[in-house]
Length: 381
Image (cartoon, rainbow, N blue to C red; front, side, top):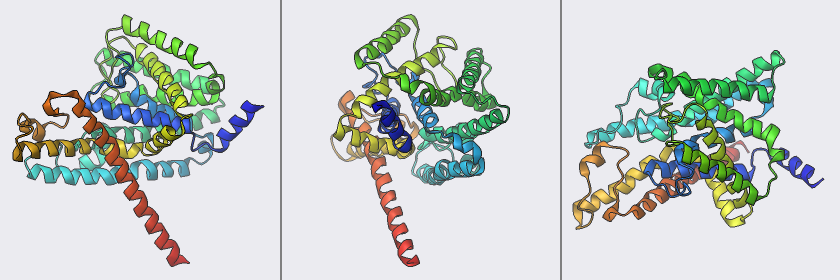
């Protein structure tokens, strides 16, 4: 009876499930840390970020997908355009302009502003202006959402809309894609369909977990972690490197099956951590807030890294500090990370800026939006 009440509560609060919001927050923290080369959260190398972290967002997106979308496909797709593509393209224009301005200041990072960079490159690779390159995921997620709802609509008409069948089919296509990528056949424009086929199983994992597995996820924490971490230890020992590149569909060192196994174990580990955190009120509240603003962190954290490097650059110019700062790398390489005094602890500055400043941007924009809505409401009144 208690479980029924809990399940009913979760159904009625579908859009805000703390455990999943916290998992999203964990995912974006791992993304930011990964772009710093900071392995602080990989559990002693057991769960390399690049063996699963992008798939966390696919899993969460699949979890929150509703079947009702198949009855209102037009409205659903318009909603996705408004929530995903519109803000992406607005910020893409901003970063295109910024890239042009910084070229004039001596930077060689990113392309010059163009229609291709604004509207086509986001769907090809998403690395056009570089200052927002982590947001390559947003157009990909949009395309996956479109493919998913259309596929499910067709399968419904054929009376084949079964979760296990969809998951099995997408997984088989993903495995085939990895096999082709290992053979060197996923290159050039083939990267676009390859990326979609490779990542679609992650979306369906969220669906299969919600529909078929969530009610069975009742194992106590001790045995749960023993199983998940035990499997991961074996994978780590037997395989020659678990990381892969989701955006480039490359760097698969262990055949076509291991990448999906590491996705499952990585998500399983952090999903249970998210559940534990959800029971700690203060920490859960902060993590939920981050989880609600993953778009902002994904879009802006690289620029925030640049701001930290700018401070170090100014220190190298006008103070006796940071004399070893590499100015050439600063002006030409987006992934350059300067470590003050050669200390890895400097990465905490980047990490805090990469998460905290985008959250501040999101808060400011939210408050501006609320203010505008309030004024419009008063005028109508």
